[in-house]
Length: 442
Ligand code: PFF
Image 1: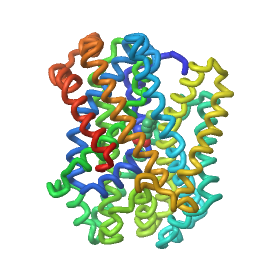
Image 2: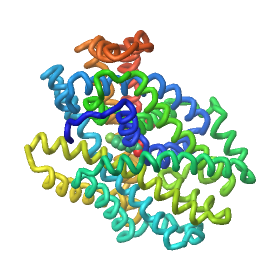
Image 3: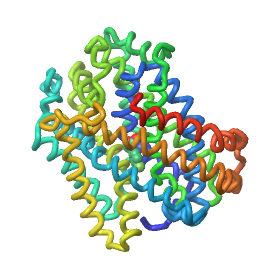
């Protein structure tokens, strides 16, 4: 990536939001909320977002801006001994990227469904299952998504994509709000709305917290070096705390709306029996919504175009990180690295894709292959990185480094809490989460 810097605070906020807002918000958040008790999950997520999410994001952005480097360089700059944290951070996108493209491929498929006017066929009981259970079609769609992402990264036209997505994103929000209003008014949807909004303490447990924490990392692109890189592009005078708040608000707002669109619809169309669908939830539920009103096919088409853009901007940020790390390590040419990353990502994406079909008999820790990669990255790797990061900042270089950086461009209102969180609360909670994840409790 070129070190050009953003021309304004808004530029930084929008670019970081482009990475943060993606399939995590629209596809992952609703199915996790559905699975983990609706309102309880939402409540836990919101609490974690304003505490942990904020703490980790401001830390990463400040590290990037202070050092002017991406993750690997930033840690090296502050402490040679701790530079391994940067490498560990760089590993996470490598696990996520291949399976992210598998889901991106599913979006491509649905775009095809609405282009060819097959919206009503897509509502049949086994339509989606048959698609992901196949071999050539999902792999072909994975390939298309991967090529689209690679072409952008290869040609270095992210700026163009970001510009387009700046226009697309507000349209996506407006359509999602419209759809959620429609879904909420469907027969039987009220029960879903209550399930989504009312915390039921019966659903509270470590499982919910672990799932919400993993989602937080994923959705906000945390603990993988991305926010460090974006921070390094940020203007020295831009208000850091405010920017981080805005990204968080944006990201959480879109996830919230997506849940509002999907969960009540699950109740309206299947009486709530699909709540445990997992990763396929959005693709099973939304076609039913689009099919239920006149002109739904057109709305379906527009919707999936927009989701594809949101997914692409996130996938680009994932691939960029991977490519720049390899360019740095191997001092290799960008074009070569891009092509190699594309091929390897495809090969690694194959088992995740086939895990819903010919490899469905293969489960790891009781999970499908895609779920397993998702679990390893979000529930194991990211807490490890967050733990190391909090120890590094809280105890080795001291929170002062971050506080001073934030205060160099504005007041740090959350300063006291920040110190306590990064030194004590984040590490302790990460250890608890890791232990629960590792002993297979969740
Ligand atoms: N935050 C993105 C999403 O919610 O879809 C996914 C993502 C992008 C994760 C970039 C990690 C990342 F580095």
